[in-house]
Every structure is written in C-alpha cells, then in structure tokens.
Length: 327
Image (cartoon, rainbow, N blue to C red; front, side):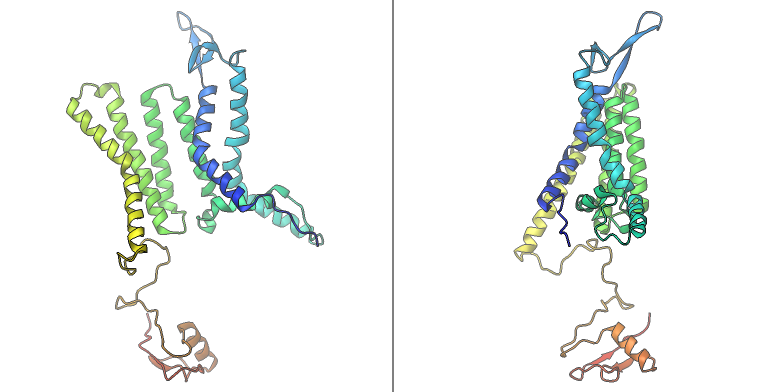
C-alpha cells in the first residue's frame, strides 16, 4: 500500500494559521483602500471621470494606478476570499467527497477532491475549537473581518463609517451570543465581551467625532477619551491578570482547588444536595453507576438505595455503595 504523503507538516500548519489570523485584516484593508475610487465632478455636478480615493491626482485604473491595483486584486482573490469560502463550505464539500468515495468504493487510494484531503490539517487547526455543528464559524470569523475591512476602506464619511461598523458589530455579537459556537463556555463569554467592548468603543468614538457634538465641553471629551483608552487596554489587563493567576497557581501560591467555573462547558454536575456525585473508592476496583445499573439489568433485579458491589457481581474489598438515589 502506497504511503500517503502529507501536504503540510504540523509546524507549517501552525505557521500558516498564525499568519492568516494576524495579517488577514491588514492586507485585506490595504487592498480595499488601493481599489477605492472617487468620482471627479465638474461644475454643475457633471461627472468627468474617476480617481483613486487616497490620491485624487491619479486616474482610477490608469497607467499609474494599474501597478498597484493588479496586486491588490490578486491579494483579494487568492488570499482574502479563499479562507472564508473554504472554511464555510467545508462541510458541504466533505459530503460531496463522501458520496463520490462511496461510488468509488473499490478504489482504496481514492484521490477524489484532492485539495480537501490534503488541506484537512489546516482546516482542523481553525475549526477544532468550535462545536461539531458550528465549524463553519471558523470561516465566518474571516468573513466578519472581510466585511469590517471593506467598511473601513470604502467609507467616505465619518458618520457612515461609524454607523456601518456599529451595525456590523452588533449583528455579529447577536449571532455569536445566540449560537455560542465554541466548545468551552469560557471562550463564548470572552468572545461576547470582546465584541461588546469593540461596539462600545466605536459608539464612544462616534459620539466624539461627529460634527453635531463638536461643541461639547473639553472635560466631557477628556472623560470619553479616558474611557476609550481604558476599554482598549481592558483585554490586555485581563490577560495579564489571568497569566499572573496561572503562574501563582503553578507555583502553589494559590490552592489547586480554586478554579474558574466557566472553564469547561460540561463541568461536573452537582447532586440534589449540591455535592459532586463522583465517588472514589478505596477498594481494588470501583463500581461506577453505569456498571451497577447494567449488571442489575442483567440480573433482572432493580437497583435499590442500598446495593453492594458483591450483589452486582463486582468484586471489591467489602465496599458498599450507598445513597445512590434517583434524580
């Protein structure tokens, strides 16, 4: 059997993933700014041509603009569009591949849809933190950045800029709060807080920048700017605090029993009396609840409140399970 050669090694996968996450917004925004245009009007509002928005003396797609416009188009086509399209459409493409593989079941070395199989490590590096039915959110995160970068680059008015960004952030916040796509509850909480923080910063910046509020007192402006700076550095403060907490816990300055209750989505469920129902026995073997009930079903004897492991057919050192109870 021919050994399949991997397209990506783990180090290469991590490098590509980090590059896309850190630089996606920047090169996408730069491409949109290069391709942004403005109309050139004569007296009476007659349109006489189009120029580059960031440099009004250059004709749009003219000889001076083409050396910059063509690379910008290539970046959008080959670097900006593929990540969201691939990560969003991946479940559908996988179903297509499964159907084609069933039709070619006799071929063990199936090469159908080669890019999908070869790109699986890269795709999983983005989708691994999401729940199984929410893996498309890995692509939606890139799509949100694509939309925000387009708004920033193509908006020509401050009011239009802040209004569109606020609508986009609130829409993204609503979707993420309703779906909660991450496996861990803590990630969902941090995601919602970050989006709410950005929406609040944008709202304060909008209030200070619009012309209708230019007559507000300097003290109010200074207070709003201070609040914006605090909100900007708040994530860094939280990360630093969490890092210090982990270091103190690592060196046993803080007891190991102190944990964040939001760390896991499926945290241990407390019983009716508020005590964790997971029991630890000192015998040679432990008698788990599922083993007890399955064995009792085989013996055709319903489990009672006081059932010993010996009655269930499991050897222990006279360890008795008591107070199992029913919820």
